[in-house]
Image 1 (cartoon, helix red, strand yellow):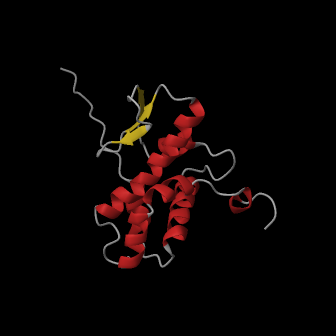
Image 2 (spheres, rainbow, N blue to C red):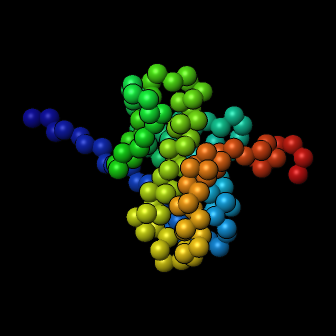
Length: 147
């Protein structure tokens, strides 16, 4: 009788990132997390290849009609994108969900041993700004253009 192979749930990429103590302010921490994702996946170049990032971390993406919602991520790190959105919107939504994983890990206590309460509070208060802005790096930050 054939055995059913069940894939293990992916590990939140932010958990490993947050395992090391970091002293940066909140905004820099978010940028460092985005760089961590890109460097780990070998995708630190423009245009950003989010498929390469999510594949590297074994994060499945599904597309479905989400009735007015752009995207969401389940507790087991499955990313759902609104199939009715344009591909560019889906790409931005996927980037947003990859940043949301940082907040999942924070809420699970991944940085409790070292993160300052003020940094944690700022991250939580500005979560949506940071989820969107973590990927909006100018070309110079990615190594292109003037330094």
